[in-house]
Image (cartoon, rainbow, N blue to C red):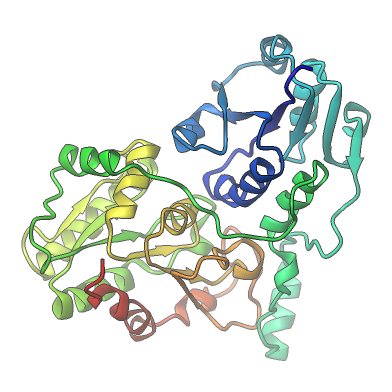
Length: 369
């Protein structure tokens, strides 16, 4: 009998990719003998290198047509395919690959491409943006922030999909393995000196690709960094993508100008995804907005202080990781899921520097890391 060969169409964004880890772990647990292939955008391929949950990675380079990709996949002899994204394209890829069993959530225009279009998971909550009028009405009524039930988390959506193949639907923390040699190589490449345990490195991520509504004010990041530096003698690695290079460079320069010389380094736009994972794991603490590197830091096991305002930790936060502390702004209009705040940014402004310092200091001062 031919071994079972499962193709999983992965998601397109870093944070979402981390949230699929529990489902992939449960799938491997349920199908230990199967050959599991992950189809992933090329920009995320480095995330999966060396992960024992998978047998093979197939990358989608930017600009490759769905017809070309379908032709490439057709020779894989896959017996089953499962798509995490809800797009028409992802279902079309599996159909063009001629996989006999194709599983995904039912959505308009793509159900005919799936052999098993699944109904929406019981308990699922869509990430619905609030309108301007809804935001203003919530502020006027002074209603408490909306707290969504734990059953709503997106991790459970991916587990629901893999449960169709016999995998357990019970959540587990996302875990990403980073080899020691990768950490050593990244530290050496960027000249991050870890020889003095009295001066630990902490991570700071002030960007958020989704939009400015998720970004805590930059001056508060700097003020927090300086307060923690004064009490712990810490140094800072400032992370971000290429688009954050200017912001991260200014933050690092500000920390050094107002604090200790050589106490901050910007690595925004300089690291590969694998190097980012390695450097985050080397940090004694990571202070971050709600963004992809937040999920990555939690998955590699770094202590994390995550700041939430316009988004919901119950829906997309790293709530299954014991090393994560959530600090959220108690605004009546939150979460609104907007890219830009249409009023006064009160959710993120409600998070004060003393709030964040109090959450971060215990981890920054621990001697066990």
